[in-house]
Picture 1 (cartoon, rainbow, N blue to C red):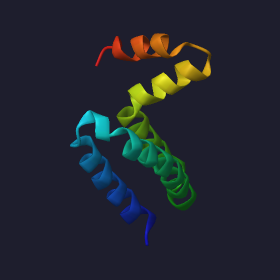
Picture 2 (picture 1 turned 60 degrees about the vertical axis):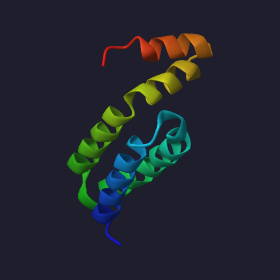
Picture 3 (picture 1 turned 30 degrees about the vertical axis):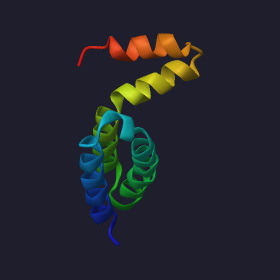
Length: 91
């Protein structure tokens, strides 16, 4: 199956997960984030740097708050500090 078809299916899955209530989004969201890394790598290997960059920017844009939370946790902030940093950010 083509990498672009898989990427399109990923987008449809992400849209379906976004329609779920928030409490049901965590596990599928983590799975989508992990799959995105593999898909972006495959897009880059198949089509080059520009499509890789565009796909990476799109995924970071979609997952900006969860990624910010993870980065804050990795640099040593407490859970409460990381959550307040994520929730106080402008939309």
